[in-house]
Length: 273
Ligand SMILES: [Fe+2]
Image 1 (cartoon, helix red, strand yellow):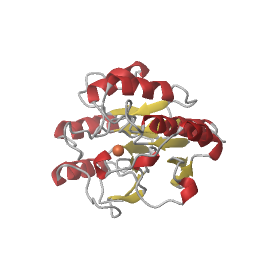
Image 2 (cartoon, helix red, strand yellow; image 1 turned 120 degrees about the vertical axis):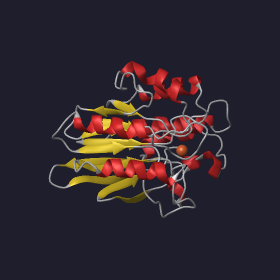
Image 3 (spheres, rainbow, N blue to C red; image 1 turned 30 degrees about the horizontal axis):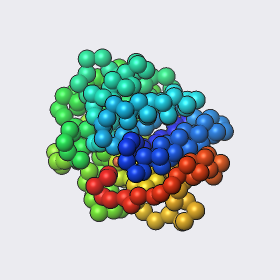
Image 4 (tube, helix red, strand yellow; image 1 turned 90 degrees about the vertical axis):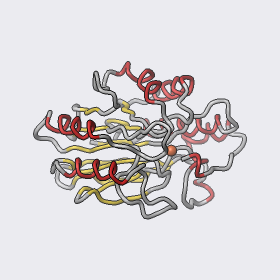
């Protein structure tokens, strides 16, 4: 099983960097489409758009429609839960009657569980008590398969960059960590939000953060030729070894079309995370 994991595309229409954000997103999907062997599934771990606007989601839906593999999304702190839900509900995988965008995907050797850590008006994540109860139900709905959990905010201490914790309160992060550690079948946690690669643990569970797709917002040092090429993660599952994660730099072919369209590179700021 091969999961293409993308995050933090931050589509922002009517802004100086709009074309570049679209290009980063489009070239990433083109690169995933060219993977050989192909990805079985694509997961976007949030901050799909920058301002939560419906027209931004319409653009995201159009870009993701070009993906050959099925796509699953969850919200980040820059997303608007209602507008995201409206834009993507046609795919039918959101849990009916659930306030949060927490759901399970059953179609693969590894179950995928997406958890919604969006706290409206707050850049930090949240995980409420009712979500912990719902997570138990999602886990118990299938007794045998391993599980990979996806969140926007990483539920572990991130030791690179200026911010070590990415939840609004330590209580909410601990609630999520406790809930995850109740199930021995959870074998991986994959997140976004930090805009740079990071790894850690949730108890014994390995956890990883994928860099952002939006190249103007990416944190960390990259060689000059890579600065206009998005990065995403490919998680390959082996029943004997679990997940092996590869950082994939979008190919020059996939990014060439984007570079022809890109006029300028706005500076990033921490406020954009
Ligand atoms: Fe972000």
